[in-house]
Amino acid sequence: MPAFFKRRDLGFALLTGGVGLCLVLLVLAIAFELVRQSQLSIAKFGLSFWTNSVWDPVSGEFGAKPFIWGTMYSSVLALLVASPISLGIAMFLSELCPARLRTPLVFLTELLAAIPSIVYGLWGIFVLVPAVRAVQTHFPEFLRQLPFFTGPRAGIGMMSAVLILAVMVIPFTSAVAREVLKAVPVAQREAAYALGATQWEAIKAALFYARTGIIGAIMLGFGRALGETMAVTMVIGNNPQISLSLFQPQYTMAAVLANEFTEAADELYLHALIEVGLVLFLITLLVNSASRLLIWSMNRPQAARKVTTTELPVGEAA
Amino acid sequence: MNWDAYRRLKSTAIVWLCGLSVLIALVPLGFILFFVFSQGLLSLNFAFFTSLPAPVGETGGGMANSIIGTLILIGIGALFAIPIGVISGVYAAEFAGTKLATAVQFAADTLNGVPSIVIGIFVYGVAVLPFKQFNAFAGGLALGIMMIPIITRTTEELLKLVPVSLREGALALGATRGRATLTVVLPAAAPGIITGIVLALARIAGETAPLLFTAFNNRFLSMRLDQPISSLTVQVFTYAISPYQDWHRQAWAGALVLVTLVLVCSMLARLATRRLERLQTGQ
Image 1 (cartoon, rainbow over the protein chains, first blue to last red):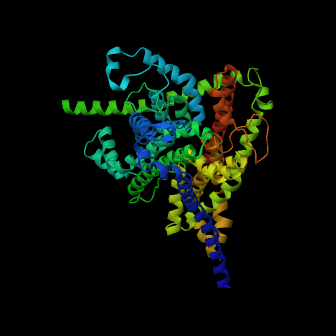
Image 2: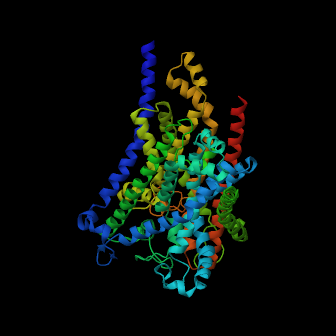
Image 3: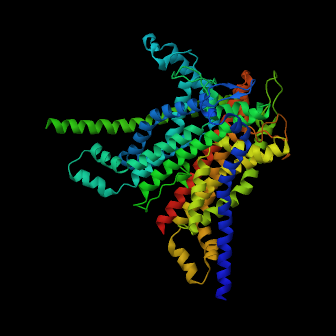
């Protein structure tokens, strides 16, 4: 009889483990498929694919540099806007907020993450872009000399993309940062107060204690911003050029895929596009793994509260 | 004294700045909801739910085909994502600490971080290219792949919340580990898991990027899995970037339907969670 039970249990482990293994295989399959489908482009362009800035489907010359630039530049700028705000939200909701306000405010910030990307894009085209255009037309002329503000005043362009990305990243970064701050032992704060610290000085101590996790939260937001497709595609202007200017229309990796994939007429073109996807995959993989490592390392000593990066922030409701 | 006053002032200022940052985040939310509801309600009518898209140049028409298409796509995705997600979540929770469980967690997190457009490329390679035809099945597959990691992690988290005493009770009665999980632990966590799944479905219903080159789009009502199929999100995208006023109107109506879906699901989940929390603290 015991042997029978044992065997049953082995069956349970094998069945669930087998399905779990599928998940691991799926990730490997995605990587494999991306490489396999882009081999023509990889073989033809090699590493120059990363550094060439010509994207010319007609003559069959493909370089992804403008797209890599657009993705990185828009995401970094979005982080610069979103991170301080996200940290402010996290501090307010975890330390300062009256208990009665907390649940509704958490719910509302989570809603920002729940709104579909396409709705952000629609709103971006018809509301944000005209607003940005108005700001740009009234932009002080002497500042237009700076490399950040040259170019057309079209509204469509880097500035709109950065703003929309920042809004979309805030809920993710703030949710993780909030969890990380929650994991800081109360003793840490009490010690600060016992030494006569003000509220801010106590929070500063908590922030310092949680610094790895906070950096992890910001990097998680970075990962989100890198892969964001629809909203950015609709407002960034889709023009492959490398420019520091916030006024210039530019292009991102995700956007070129969304726009050109169904139009790729010949095989090399298609392979080049898929290689763009591969580059995007590799960069997000790197950023997300680093962010997860930081959040995990922050949380290991506590073990009681565990922050996962998956179902946040709405999943927190679950 | 002066130094103290400065410190107190600084602290108060930063507390207010933190409060302000919450407001800053809520302003775009308010704006988006305001525009989606005001523009959407103006454009939403009965025909939107019952008619097919009107030909270019004609006003009117609706998105009946897209609504049905979205439901079909989500259905296909859920069909395989729910079992795979739940079972792998059970494994990650029950065998936590083993190498494979860690690998499953890592894979779920990685999969969750893969940009949705890249998932679209993957599915294009495995389910569109071989058939030389955009098809509904591929779209469902892409959505399902996006659902799996969310369901896996939700299941895992919720199983870990089930009190150990419940499991120990089952084991003490002679149940094997698998039986204890299936008949005691999983049912205890079921309401939460179902809530998580509903949220995942609502979230995935709003995805556009993975459908662009898997399910593609279809101006007609199609229920065939081997043919391109329309979806609300792709249809909204097509309309939004078109030059026609009437199509913009339809796009807002579509956005309203999407946002309402997400809002209702989030609120239901919120209510369900609150009841669960009350149950747990009551125990």
